[in-house]
Length: 101
Image (spheres, rainbow, N blue to C red):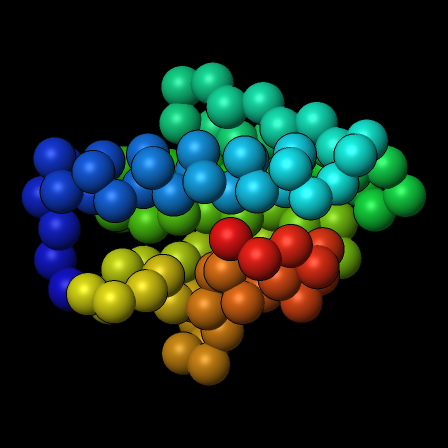
């Protein structure tokens, strides 16, 4: 699904905020820092996740200490991996860090 810049921002910005808030609420020692479209999650005992908006491609990019790098595109309903249509962003985060967003 093709997104214009405004629609992409209206989907991606609240998503990054929700992820950061959910992680900090669920994990006592976690740190979530959101700055300029880049969310950095520092999770003791797990590592550091970086989730950012990639506006030119209208994608969300994820760097995971467990599964590596992923790119997610909006399907109209959810953020799905551009390389594996069975992989959904929030499902991957839930599986890796155990937090429901």
